[in-house]
Image (cartoon, rainbow, N blue to C red; front, top):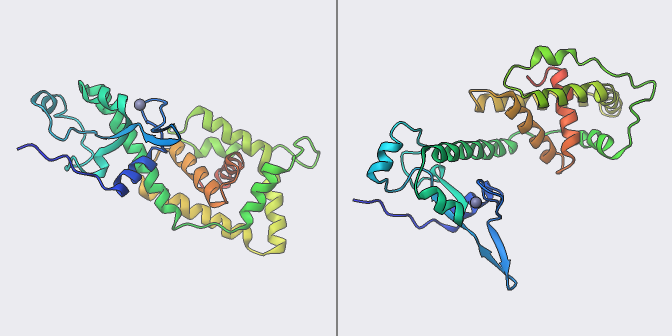
Length: 255
Ligand SMILES: [Zn+2]
């Protein structure tokens, strides 16, 4: 007997819509559009593994990873724009199946990471450092700001970091390590133990991410840490958060 297509609740749809940020994960289409001053849907909920696989689909996907044993489970569902959904279903190909499984796994990981954000907080002083980095015109050529030698980085990163991310971390450490350090010293004079508290919060969040992701990928961890810090510090600058996480890589709280 064929399985029923479940009537998804509004909350399920909201979760799946939010998961992809309102954009089709397979093409640049937005999932809503406006016509005659009304918001209209351009999306459908797609089953990644088919709800009622045909004989040839059973054969095609027999060795492939399934995201859930129940095809109606949210883990097997994804929001797609209408045309990508049609293309994905007809006919199903192994390449497209693998691609969508990989995309959904990334989305699931990102949602899980966001849940961790509730557990790990960061002292408000971090905002002052982010402000300094993002709003003030720091003169990197000033004599008392010596370029820092980012020698720790090579030792700490492995081959799961991308060359671009590694270069970015090194550059950030070189240009900003001393500036950030000086600011931390200043903050400690106002409120003792600020640096130590923030360092341990960074370390804790890093460890939680490692615990969550068994096959630890340094590029994913770095991006996730930056994203977390930026959101935790009032949606402030991603660039400044990158500089700070780079600082903590050099300082050994991260990696
Ligand atoms: Zn699409």
